[in-house]
Amino acid sequence: MWKRSFLSAVLSRVRRSSAGCGLLLFPLLLSPSSSGAILVLKNGRTFRGDVTRHDPKNFLLPGGKVFVPAEDAAWFSKSTDVDQVIREWSEDIRGRPDYEDALLPLARFCLQEGRLERGTAFAREWARFRRWKAYLSREFLILTAMKEGKAKKIGARMDAALALLRKEFPGSEKGRYTCVVRLFRDLDEFQRAAQSLPYKPETSYYYPKERTVYLVSSKADSPQWTYWDAYRVLCYHFLIDRYLGFNPKYTWILVGTAACFENARYRSGKLHGAWRKHRENADRIRAALRGKTYVPLEKFLRMKADDFAMGDPYGIHVAQAWSLVYFFHKSRKRRYKDAFFRYLEVLKKTGDDERALEKVLLPLGLKKLERDWMAFYGLR
Image (cartoon, rainbow, N blue to C red; front, side, top):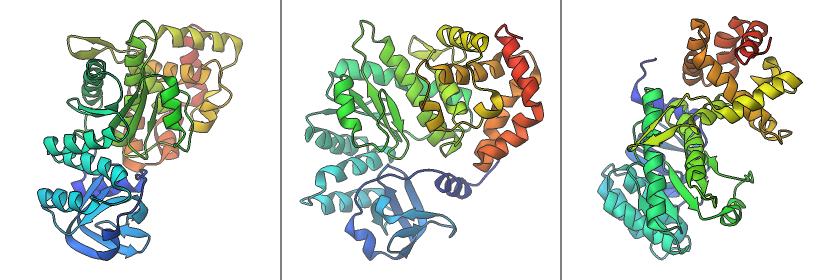
């Protein structure tokens, strides 16, 4: 792992990540710079220090290399006193036409700064406008119209999933309440809300720009389907925002890892078995290998999100991503067992998918890797 200063880590993560969305508050236009300041984005991300107003459309973060669009900002203050910032921010938005929308970034900031009582109050006020409710788990702000008991059960399992992810991926960010969970009662409610997203997902989804999980509650007899969905979608949030610090261009690493974690099991308040065999995906990839409907690894390892989503009605791309990640973890050959985390480490350090591929996977020899991967699933 690499030793980087806190400042360089922040700069690296902002450079490679998506910021939030929403309306810019007027006080931002009046403050060109400050040597001690707090800048809060609408997705909850916060920056402290020498923030400079570079031009009407951008802020320049400490170090003078990373720009943040001004339209992505929720609040800027020359004060570094958190309680003063909350007081000024809450007083400013009262009576504003965008008051309802401004409440959620303020609530997120309060929660992340440990002001749980005030953060909960602002979140509940935001939720009342939508006839929803706001609940806190140990790690997440949950917004929903569902009953408290069911919402808190899902929250407890997401807390456990985050704990397991932190254990499996050391060196991730430790902050609480960095992600909001919008929990929907059914698919219809979810799809109405998803109309505001640039991508129209058909089921539970993580939207990195908002740092928000859109989670659909299953109507099936068993709530387990909802929990599996929660583990899968949460894995995207963890890898993008807490571990890598950006959204990778090549998608297999996210899809495959998330498919592994959705198969974990919850017992006695903890999640277990991140790398368990996923029988459905195992059967699907074997059928694809026998029928030669899989994607050759040379192409598959460079597939982007749109390529994954299109032309995959039978879930073969997802099964192939799972099978590759599972193979790396379970292979008896040390060079394959090490490859997964070495790939992630290079990705985290450089923010460059192609460089990670060139430094870690291509030297393995893709043809040999493909033969060994196929043999692992019983085909040669």
